Image 1 (cartoon, rainbow, N blue to C red):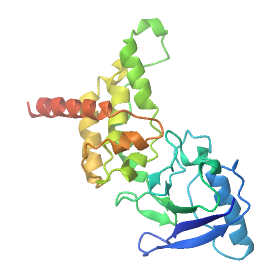
Image 2 (cartoon, rainbow, N blue to C red; image 1 turned 135 degrees about the vertical axis):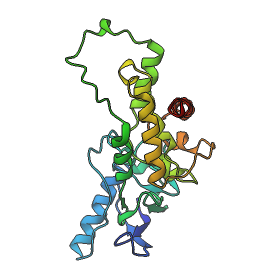
Image 3 (tube, rainbow, N blue to C red; image 1 turned 90 degrees about the vertical axis):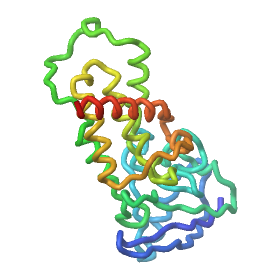
Amino acid sequence: MKLTLKIWRQNGPNDKGKLVDYPVDHVSPDMSFLEMLDVLNEHLVEKGDQPIAFDHDCREGICGMCSLVINGRAHGPQGAVTTCQLHMRSFKDGDTIYIEPFRANSFPVIKDLAVDRSAFDRIIQAGGYISVNTGAAQDANNLPVNKNDADKAFSAATCIGCGACVATCKNASAMLFVSAKVSQLALLPQGKIEAQDRVLNMVNQMDLEGFGNCTNTGACEVECPKGISLDNIARMNREYLVASVKKEK
């Protein structure tokens, strides 16, 4: 395959940045998208040029580091996959592919396609944990959990914090991410003790980080590689309302 890549190059958060054309040839349809970028970087290094900076880690679709906007879509044209699990067979010979970083004021560009998503870490630090010492693991039957609640908590916990929801939302909202982190604990007995403080602190930190409000368009759920449900946002709103009322009392 022969492709034309239009890749965003930017030296840092204070630089203007621009799209730069890179023609690539002999691309195998069986390559992953990141492998294709690896090959391009090898050629750039051989020529003495600066390689393209992009995030990656496990390359198994479970860590969320490989966050790119490809042809206007977070993680690319294939649904329910991360960029590292996207293969070049999803494109055609002769295609022009636009590759950009996640766009959000709360995700400043570090360099090229790599952005700083430490805002998510600070949100989790604000309340996405259980501080009560529960001791050694108990037998599963000692703490019954409703099967429906357990399934919902597990589904929420599959959020990998990649930020695709933020990059997709026209308001750069982090509501889907935060609601997933709230839900995975709020639905379980272990998370009930700190439930009120958790949702108040995490939502407050989300606002401090500069994320926008939810648009209710559902684009975040569509582009989420793990299919996190909008139901979590509704649950977080209920949790937040109840916690706010109780705090005023």
